[in-house]
Image (cartoon, rainbow, N blue to C red; front, top):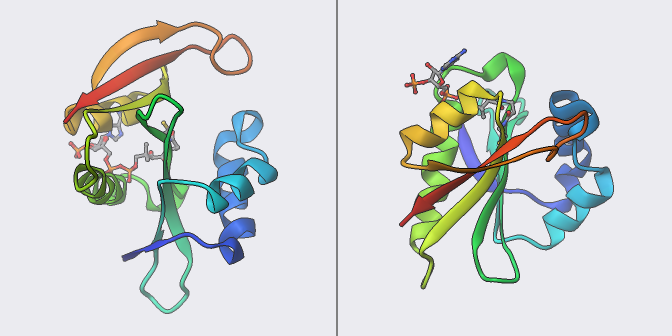
Length: 148
Ligand SMILES: CC(C)(COP(=O)(O)OP(=O)(O)OC[C@H]1O[C@@H](n2cnc3c(N)ncnc32)[C@H](O)[C@@H]1OP(=O)(O)O)[C@@H](O)C(=O)NCCC(=O)NCCS
């Protein structure tokens, strides 16, 4: 597996992964397009077996207050639970740490998403406030924070 920056030619493949995984809560294709054009980091994990299939991706942006937001991390279903999510997150956290003046990284995660919460906690993120009705169908989210 290798990590590379996402480009516009990846839009369809990324959107397919996004919509298959998050269904109605997925970013629209247009949002993904905007994120490819405007991001702090948008990395893809690519299969090295010759297929060049995108196995997963991670998106980081800075909000208006200058806080670093991890807004999406995804590993394709058949590749989950093999350490790839940890690998992509670790790589990205190291890139963020190389930036100047970054003190916190924040993210929102579905409060029922045990694997993701576990993964983020493994890297030092702490659970902050619960945000009710963050997703559709009254699903709540946790704000998670990593101080660096
Ligand atoms: C969350 C996600 C990115 C994790 O990627 P991954 O490649 O499967 O993660 P890893 O294999 O690196 O690590 C998973 C960890 O969770 C653990 N885990 C797996 N299933 C679990 C379960 N049902 N309950 C608790 N922990 C579990 C694994 O043991 C592993 O822990 P370890 O590193 O201590 O061994 C992936 O599951 C995913 O894409 N999910 C759908 C999209 C999503 O929800 N993204 C998060 C958005 S905020």
